[in-house]
Amino acid sequence: MEIKLTPLHDKHIELNAKMHEFAGWDMPIQYASIIEEHKCVRSKVGLFDVSHMGEVVIEGEDAVELLQMLVPQDVYTLEDKQIMYGQLTNKQGGIIDDLLIYKYNDEKYLIVINASRVDADIPWIRQNAKDERFKVNITDLTNDYSLLALQGPNSSALLDKIGIKTESQPKYYCFDDYKLLDTNVMISRTGYTGEDGFEIMIKNEFAVKLWDTLMNEGQEFGIMPIGLGARDTLRLEAAMLLYGQDMTEETTPIQATLGWSVSKNKTHNYNGKDVIKAQLASKPNKKIVGFIMEDRGIARHGYEVFNGGNNIGVVTSGGISPTLNANIGLAYIDSSYTIDDEIDIKIRDKFFKAKIIKRPFVEKVNKIVR
Amino acid sequence: MEFELPENMLCSKTHECVYKENDEYVIGITDFAVEQLGDIVFVELPEVGTEFSQGDIFGAIESVKAASEIYAPVSFKVKTINEEAIEKPELLNQNPYRDGWLIKAELTDPSELDTLMEYEDYKSEAN
Image 1 (cartoon, each protein chain N blue to C red):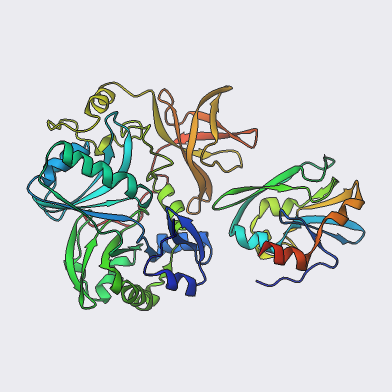
Image 2 (cartoon, rainbow over the protein chains, first blue to last red):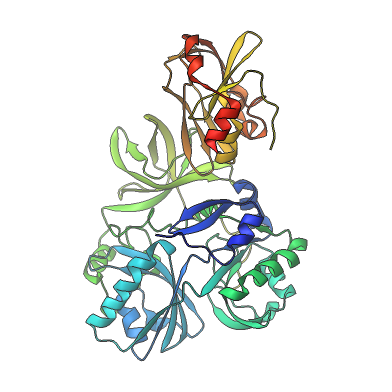
C-alpha cells in the first residue's frame, strides 16, 4: 500500500522533520527536540499536523439512533455545537476505537476517529446502519480535509490575532463554523495534550495557507511546530489513553477507567451493553492505573508488572514526563491494587520500583474556558 | 551536527564505536546513532570488571521515544564507566565522542577490530 501524505508534507520536509510511517501516513515525529517541543506546548503554543485523523459525517433522520447503538454514551444529551468523548464498542463491550462526536443538529453529526482505525471503524458503522435499517448517509471526509491542532496557553491569543476573536471562540468541548483566510473552517476547543487549545478542520487546499499564517503570526507567542513524539509525551502526562496501547478490542471502557464517560442510566440499547452494565455494577478484574517510577528506569509498552514476585499486569504506555522530570506510565493491573501501592516493573530482566499515583500526572496549569 | 572524529575510530553495524585514547580503548555510540535516537534520557552501563564477547548486549540507551540495547563491538572487559553520562544522558547528544563516551575497556581479542568498519564506510552503509 502506498504511504499517504498530508497536504502539509512538504512543510515538514522543509522544516527538516524526522518523518516516520504512522497508520499508513508519513508523519513528522519531531522537528527539533521532543523535550523542547513538549515544553513549548506547556508554556507557549505549538502547532500539530494531525491530518491523518479520520473525519466522518453521519447524517439523516436516524443519525442519532445509529450513534446511540455505537457508543455507551447517551448521545441524546448532546446539545448542538457540543462535543462528546466516546468509544465505539463491539458486542462484547471491547473498544473498537475512541472518538469525538460533534453534534451539528439532530440529523447531522461529525465523528473524529483514530487514523489507525479508519479502516476498521467505517465498515463497522456501515454494518450497524445496515443491520438496523437506519436511514443515514455516512461520508468519509478523511482524505478531503486537514486537521491542525493549536495547543498551549497562548493558542487563544493567537487565534484572536488572526481574526477569531476571543469572545467568539468556542468554549471547552464545543465547536463552530468560522470564516478564516477566505474559507470555511470548523474550530473546536479540544486536543490531546491536557492544555487549552483548538483543533481546526479545513479543506486540504487551504491547509498550507493556514499553517503558514499560524506559524508566522505565532512567532510573537513563541510558536513551534510539534511532532507526534511530543504529542505522545504530552498526552501521557495528561493521562489520556492511546488507542492500540491503552485500549484495544479486548478491553472495555470500564477496564480502561473511562467509566466517567459512560452513561450509567442510558435506556437505549448499544453494542456491548450487557458486559458494560455488569462491569459498572461490580468492579472489573483488571483496570488501568497510573504509576511513577521510584527507581531509575523507564517503563515501556509491553513491560510486565509484578508485586511480591507475582505477575499482576502489563505496562500499556510508559515514558518520561518532561514537566515532572520523572518517569511515568499507565498499566493494566489486577483491580485490587490502588493508589500508593508499590509495584515492580520488569525492565531488561531487572525489577524497578514504581508507585501507583493519581492521574493526571500533570494538573492543568492553565484554566480551560468552559 | 558535525563532530570532530576520534583518530582511527572503528564502527559496528549496530552503531557502536571503538577508538584508542591515551593507551585505552574507548567504546561509545556513533553520532549517526545519536542523531537517530533524538533526546537521550537514560543510559544503563555494566559494572566495572564485567566481560563481554563481541555481539553481547552490554547496556541500554533510551531516548524519549524508545529503548535501544547496545552491543559489544568487540570482546572487552570494563575498566571504567562514564558515571557522568549516567547522571546526564544529554551528554551523548552534545558530543558522543567527548563527554558522551560510555566505557573504557581492555580488549580481550583485539583481532576482532578487523571485523569493524572505518567511519566513512559505516556512514555510507548507515545512510
